[in-house]
Amino acid sequence: MNEQRIQARALMFLGTGSDVGKSVLAAAFCRIFKQDGYRVAPFKAQNMALNSFITPAGGEMGRAQVVQAEAAGLEPQVEMNPILLKPTSHMGSQVIVRGRSIGNFSARDYYDYKLRLLPVVRECYRSLAERFDIMVLEGAGSAVELNLKDHDLVNLAMAELADARCILVGDIDRGGIFAALLGSLMLMTDTERARVIGLMVNKLRGDPGLFTSGVEILEQRGGRPVLGVVPHFSHIAVAEEDSVALGARLARSAGAGARIDSGGPGDRPAIGVLRLPFVSNYTDFDCFEQDPQVDLVYFDRAGQVFQFDAVILPGSKNTLEDLQFLRNSGLADVLVGYHQAGGVLIGICGGYQMLGRGIRDPRRVESDLDELPGLGLLDMVTEMAAEKITTQVEARTAAAVWAPAPVREHTEGARKGAEADQETLSGYEIHMGRSTALGTEPVACFQVLRRNGRPVAPADAADGLMAADGRVWGTYIHGIFDNDNFRRRWLDWLRARSGKIGPAATTTDAFCYRSWKDEQYDLLADHVRRHTDVAAVYRLLGMRN
Image (cartoon, rainbow, N blue to C red; front, side, top):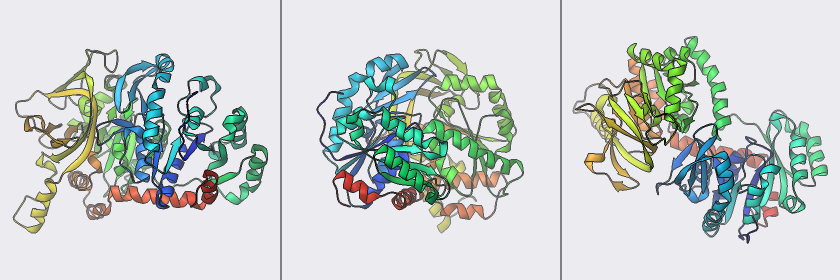
């Protein structure tokens, strides 16, 4: 990038590789700077992720920058992540620029194209830097991939554009911390190295005092201070990048699965989320993962299905190929059998589409597959459209099956229950497909009130479909379970039909997901403060704390 640099106070986290903790440390410093009274905003020029979010303006952006914005106390906006790549196959991705899809690109085509996006990156960064005191930037993968530097938009070239001071982060847990940090410094040019104000050793297990000599070696050979040795933590939950993080969730799920197989706690519903090859927006289920009264398991084998009280088919970036995976693996037949045996099935977005009678993609929007039969559990069909729907949603429940039991009477409790049914739920939609109900009297799950803040006509208000008994339903609304009252009512209904009535029915009510998330950002900031020389970071930025 031989461009005029934008003068802004900027701190950038560069990495020695993927999953070294750049995203989490950036979120921590967004919170730290906010706590210290600064106006701070996150920025990542280009992100590759299957987890995305829809802003209040209807733009799509990566979840990592959403987390960082939340930590900074901000409403997310697409300028924080101007380019998002969403893999649609093993060779290509959908490219989203400033919140809007510009089409699917092969890796080679995008490599040739992406430097045209430099003006977009520059403009988005400038628009934020003019309004905030501090910008916290995040790099991608390794900062010194020599074969990629000529087309770099997100690492050292972005540091030059932002005139950023950089912290190089390495993951000691994976081993090779000296080679990773010192080798990365060695591969930088003198000008690039001059931007690095310090090193951070992340994910240390054990006694930090035992790494004192390691700090001395890094500082002596690297010529940079070690600004922090941050211990690995398990007491804080902050959303991470999706591919590696989902693998970790599958590993953690093995423990929950073992508890379920052995009988497990009698009053906790067991919910299984199907691990699809192109799974997207699995953050829809973070609320269940953190709720102490739920056993959540990510699974991908047919033999696991019947252990759950409910199975959720999540969103997908390539619904037809994931549906073909279900058929080829035998999971499709097992899921139908699970439903016939009395099981509960829910589909979110792509998972909702799979529950219908069939999916068509005549324009080859997502894959080379033209049409596939669905699971046939909901009376509707889906066709992929050329235009993507991206919108925030406000809605109400339209199905009475989740209403508080017993049958309503004119009591104070019943009145509050009725009011809860009419509460406004929030979420967002991201989908190419358009689903059409085939039955004469479809049972909608939700009534949409507003999209992107604009009222919705009654004819366009119905969202999702469900069976009359509530055992099969689907919706296009991501984040529907983040709404605490709705999630509690559905869990109470699930617990009751599963015979898991006990203290959990009242204990669950105490868990507020949104408040819990905000607490995690404070815990993260406290953890990083304790193990980082924050005063030195301010000093090296030319600021006071």
